[in-house]
Structure formats: structure tokens, C-alpha cells
Length: 315
Image (cartoon, rainbow, N blue to C red; front, side, top):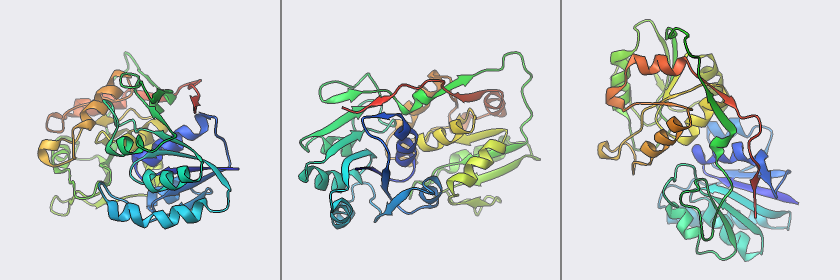
């Protein structure tokens, strides 16, 4: 039998990919359902993948468009278990899956620190879906706690070492559509050493008038290699980009997007940055207050894989 792993691209997919080898109660072979992007093609290279129509936020039309795809993929009885880290892509696949009596596990994103997302609340109305929070503070009732995707990592310090010189930098701002993040780009242009080599992955942030060259998105493998080779990674406080930095040993500088500037739909990035700073995995600064010192502090630190991350036990 096969386990179907379902996730939107970006941070949702990154979390599911990081968690899948910790699952207890579901095992390979895996089959993946996600959207067709440079990230997903690179991250899932060599896996069995169904690329399906994109679903945006609050997008009932494209949720409905995915129902025939869900029926096709789940036809034949090969799949017995579905697991998703969201977001709305889970809805058509879980609806069809539960109608066929399949086991369904919904893991709320690590971005949701105070309670479930809209998708999580809708999923709660489907009978028989096992649900998991990644924070013990709001788990309870029908939401189980089995740990967090961040449990796979541990921060390390280099006390007493001189602060490194910043020569190579990766700046990655995610690929949020319609939510540019010019504040951090303008701030970095003010504080970065003039001779620094910078890779800008800017997503929806148009930098054509700022005298720099940015790319919208890069394949996962290329971005990871650039991060590994950099002195420091600077990013918004998105879960996916933070995980990408951790995986190559980097302690990133997180500058959360803010709702008041139209950079994100809510202020959950402030909470993510706080959580990761408390774990010793990141250096956090407001975009308008970012200094070269923050970059040097992050460059002097590193992140390692935790030796024995706990199993993620599925009910």
C-alpha cells in the first residue's frame, strides 16, 4: 500500500518533506501531490509526484478543480493513508479520501502558533481526520501534539571567536504572490558592505528600479547550495526558507514581514521569528532596524541536525 503526501508548495511542502522520515505509523512508498514549481521539482526529484492545479488562499474554484484529480489519484485502492501539512490543497483530497474510508492525518503548519488555520478549522469538520498541532500550547481536545518540524535542529554558538567578515550573502524573500517586501531590500542596500557578493531571490518583490538583479525563484537544490556557500542567509520569517537554511547548517537572520505594510496577510511571522530565536536557531531583527551586526552575529553561529529527533507518531 502507498501513503499519499499532500502539500502546497513553499513552507508546507518543505515541512512535509522534512517530517516524512520521522513518521511512525506511515512509511514508504510515498506518493506526492503538490503544485508544479522549481522548488517542488527539485525537492521531489526521484519521487513519484502528481502535479495538480494550483490552489490559492480562499480559492473555492480551484479547490473544486482538484476534486477530479483527487478521484483519479485515489482510484484503484493503491493508497490507504493520506498525510498533509496544508494548506487548502488538503481539502479535496481529504474529502475524497474520507469518503472512501482512507486514513487521513492533517498536521497544522508550524506557522500556526496560536491555533489552527482556516484550512485546519474546515478539516476539523470532516469526520475521522486525525489532527496534529506543532505547538503543545494549543494542542488538546481533538488536536494531538507529536512534536515540531523544528525538533530536527539544534543551534550552536562559537563563543569568543571574532565576528566574521561578511563577503557572500543569500537574500531570499519567498514567493508570496502580490506581497512585495521592499523594506528589507532597501535596508540591506544601506548596510551591506559594498564589495559583498549577494544572491537575491526576491519573489514578488520588484527590484528592477533598485539597481540590483533578482530572480523570482530558484530550484531547491540550487538555492541550498548557494546558502551553504554563503557567509549568512537573510530572509523573511517563512517556515520553508528557515528550514532550508537550517538544513545547510546556517543560522539565518529573520526579518519578519508585517501586515501593516501589506507584506503578509497577518503577523504570524513575528511569532515564528520569536519561536526560532528562543530555540537558538535564528537571529531576529525588524527590517527597518537591521544592522550589519545582526548579520555578523548570525554568521558566527551555526545549526546542526539534532542527534535523535523524536518520532512523529501518527494515531
